[in-house]
Length: 423
Image 1 (cartoon, rainbow, N blue to C red):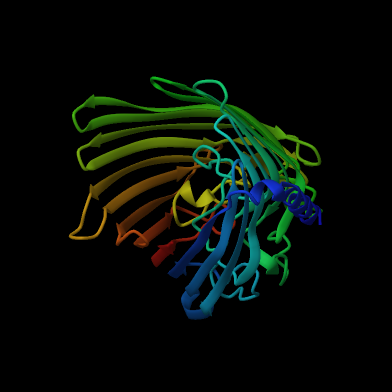
Image 2 (cartoon, one colour):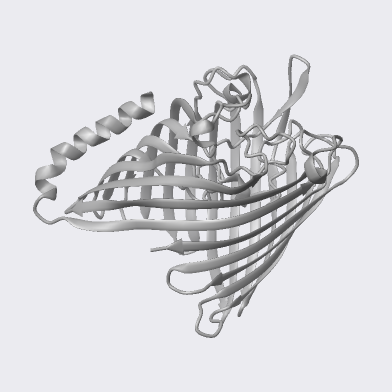
């Protein structure tokens, strides 16, 4: 309801702005479509349908447009997802004998926003897409068919050279679970998570890279204990940049640290650290990457549970810790992710655009107790077919080591093939 009230406020503001829009109106259409096949093969203790194999064919369409005049713009975008083949557990469709493919059928207003934008200042009010930095803490989860958006007011200020101040107050997150969120007993997968959330970034560009300080205050209103435990305060910094070493040779680097603790209604008293470090070396068409990421754990005890780990509930989680999505919720004992990868780019394939092939290896272990969770292999090939079309094939293979260490810790293979269209 609070999100709806914000959208109504945005509509009222749009009405006030109408006289300005009437002078010189520009319309930009939005049409995006994605057809995807996803297969999931997962081991487990129970005999599920077809040996726990899910096969999902889904089609996602976004359509709408933006009206702009001078510094004002009004954007409205609808989104719908159709399950052409629904032999999978979407998380909210009740088909719990299959592994999860988190692309439920859905129809919704994806974005409804009004924006004031000038060179030094952008203010956005309404339901909007928010991607901050590398989306490790706040992102739109664009990999899923139904993306995550926020009912929020966001202010971006660039009036000082090399400095950017970016502050958002969000009263609701519209989750990937869509209009059926919370059905079939999936109480931890709601359609909307209300709260009082503040996302603040201050970044400064130097000749060596960009230094960013951030604060993320998450205060969730949901009565479900598992969601209330996501209420947290996170403060940290990151530095990211690149340095040319020679012709067609470039070194890139990233370092980040954050400290997280309980906040607002969170019943758990905890403190945990986040650390990330990455180096990349580009040599002509090749790029080598090596990195480390820690989502730490506190040995706090709550009831019969011991340990609580650093969580990032609003992140684009699929980008991190392997594409098999085994660590969307950080295990109670934390996670250390050691990874390395290689990518190769062909700028043009005949009359088509760029082809990029990549391979990444992850080794996962606990933060506490020094136990090896497992290893994962990721591979992907993308091709830009023309101005509007692109294609992708992708594979993930998670190999568990030892006994299951957390819910869902099982050998898992995933395969995707998809076509994207954008006007």
